[in-house]
Image (cartoon, rainbow, N blue to C red):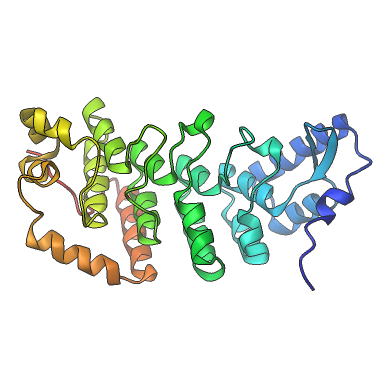
Length: 296
């Protein structure tokens, strides 16, 4: 029987705004407290409502429930929603869950923002199994609302926040490294800006830079002119070899070119092993050691 998502709105017609506020908060707290999946679904299906600005009560859709699971890292609930509802769990939420009318589906960006690597992996698996190429590209490469995230994509956010595991998952599942935000910056531009602005987490930023270089056969980005105009600064920040590659003075090494060919043929399962390895190193209080671009 086809999934009837319209039922989530029809059964809520009699609820008042005040009742919706109470039940919405109760559902939020239930997800926050990591209550069992069966109980959360029972609450969502029978008790919880949120109020829309046009003056009507709505039940929580799987998409809206997944946003709560992302915020509170309820991995079991996220797994259930993605398994049970597949792409419906990644659909556009109602207006009250979006910044503005021009917002796009926020789930991938929220996963990066909160560094929910495991749930992001579940979402990538859902896209691989259930989305066509057009849907996949739209969810991976769309710009998030200009008010909330400055019109950036999830890749831009992963670079801004130095999230190497998220970055690798997105690149490995087809996110475009050449996509630009509203300012015309690529993810590489954003990462270089972060490198120039702060010395914090520099090792992690270089890991991100290494991943981007592997997935960018042509190094096209807006800040190349700035690199050429300040060679001493950028050589110090990212290392002489990386500076020469990015400024166009010499091509990447044969090793990097070979690794680019390897990454194109690596199955998703192998990417997952790399991501898990990064996480294990962090738990062991080590810095990540991905394909780094080393400084002096």
